Length: 342
Ligand SMILES: [Zn+2]
Image 1 (cartoon, rainbow, N blue to C red):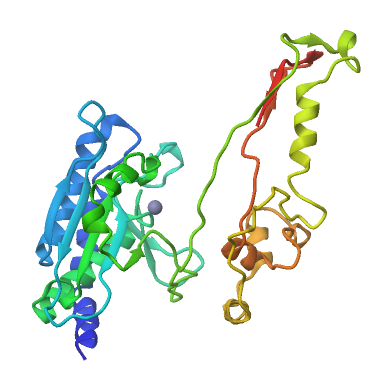
Image 2 (image 1 turned 90 degrees about the vertical axis):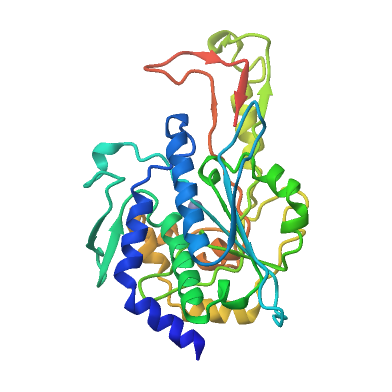
């Protein structure tokens, strides 16, 4: 009953909500570029204000160290109803954005949001830096919290909740781990974490994302001779680090495109039959997705035994993100490089 009232409140106040999101989008909170530090701070204060209005206890907390300060975290909480017996919910999002360059590719200035027809779909969309990552998503949460406060008179409708909105997600969350560690008492008490930094399957197709990919990144350098060599003299006589490195890298996958690193799949949870069936029903068109990146249906390749959706959503992958060694400039140079890196 109350939920219905909240939904209809949101419908009635949609224009105000969009106006508020536009305000936030006008603040260029680019976390990677120190030139925007004051704007990043302003975006944090703006977010804190929304949570205050929704009845939360809010703090803007510093991160990093005195010598190397990071961007602040918005940390808010509400104790919930005395009678509330459900889980203590942690909500996570971020208020920083990626740099908007190259600016000439934008139809409108990135920090002057405009409403445009949604391409290929009915309805409209907001175009601005951060509109769909992550200010738009977090704004829906702010508005829901505002509505619950208005309808029930209680912050978060009486749910016990902690809110953490960081300002460094787009620059690798450099100070988040330390911050979480320092706030272990508060954050460790949470039972579930709701992340609002994901997408929808399409217009009218909201999605609950119950798993996200993590990341392990490494760089390797293979060293050979103590100097660059002429391949006319040394080719076939001494090992070429580039040749040897690509041989090693080529063994990362077997014939079935399974990753051969020992233990790689040890902790991977299997896809259940129920999940497979549920995902099938979503009617995801993987061929159309490939077409959108200029590839034909034959390019639907990956780990044997799984379709594209399963591979993306439930299977780990291994990719070379860069490889270099030897001469990469204009023209040719008959060099055997002393080392190669990937
Ligand atoms: Zn994001």
